[in-house]
Length: 83
Length: 518
Image 1 (cartoon, each protein chain N blue to C red):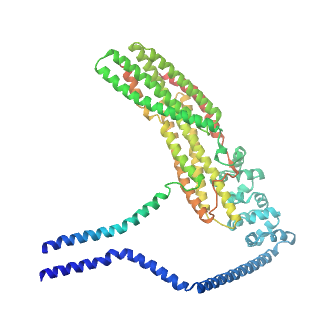
Image 2 (cartoon, chains in turn green, blue):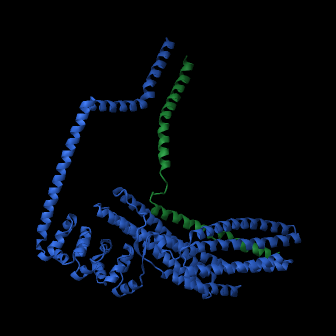
Image 3 (cartoon, rainbow over the protein chains, first blue to last red):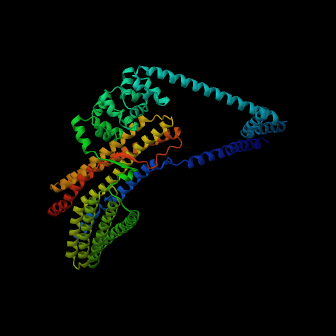
């Protein structure tokens, strides 16, 4: 009988913890939903959001027109001149 | 016995869990029950509930009516007191002040007798505009000498509010300007206005003469060039195509270089020649596609003047034609010497092209920054407009500190962008003056850093703007900052004109200098 007591006690503690967790989980899910609905950067005012969008667009243009990707051209052309 | 004790302990434990497991849910049930019970007890039977509601409504109505009568009586008393106060004004002027709406009369009659007398001598419209100002600004303007007050009160309420943000000494300096100059300076945003007011009288007059004021409905109205939507779509499609082709050429370039290395390692002469040729051709393609990308972005920029755009595009086309000529030579090459010669030519071309490519890329970025600055300038005016409308409705929104900060950031961005433009011009001038590549690189780096600072300032302005809009929306939910409203703004055409001039010189000079160096 003594041998059964300890496993029963552990089982009860686990089930108790699981029950409490189950009650809390739906509340957590609801909070996440609300957070997802809030736009990350938008203010809902077109003129204000346009400034934010334009700032992003300037960064994109800068990356698109960067000549960094052509930095190894010199070395390649030098290789050709040494054939 | 032991068994019984053990079972008893387990039973006690299990029973103790029952209330714990239902505790959370139970609490909400209890709350709901309590609310229902309270509702029921307060409601009682349908009849008594309706009677209670009628009684409460009646009481509220009576209270409101009482409060309204009280407010009306107080307002009447206040108006009488205000009219008594303005009795110090000469009779012939009194009627103009008495006819003002209560709020305005309240503000104006609380001025000192000397200031009141000065204002009373103005015409009815001027008095009306002045009395629309907030008390602090009204006090500041009423402090001015009669002649200055006379001139400044010809401006609209919105303009006077902006001018009254200046310190006393500067306000006096500004008030000494002619009517036309006053109209011009009052168009400026807060930060630019302060900047102008800091100048000495002579300089102020000269700069005001050069100042160009335009009426626009939105930031696009300040663009240097109008591009039809259909054309914009075509240009964007071309850019995307060039971008894709550039990527492909870059990938193939890498593979061609690996294959060339492999052929050389194997000492396979025929394959080496073929792979070398392949590498030169892919290099030419990558350069052409990169130039095509820049060309499309230049063509797409509404803030690059038409003549500048035409020059840049012509120059890029000329560069593409030259690269195509080298490409044709490489294609026709049958010997190692010929392919070496084509590679050498292409390397020389790339050496001088690097600077122009960077220059034009920064120019595109600076045009974008200019567009953002323009947005900020127009938005400051729109905010003034929205705030003025709110004031007409009797709603005061205290965002003056934030609007001043916003104006400061936009002005800072404008200053940095103008400096960057000057650096870009300087870079072209340096090239013209046989400058070293290091000097040109330094100038380009500086322009890039300035444009970055300008963007940082705009980002900060954007954050401030969000706070302003939030405050306005809280006070005036239907306020529309995005609606197109005609506003007067300063339009600076000089920055572009300077760099356009420099660009045309440099385009030819850069070629000559670089050709000499190779």
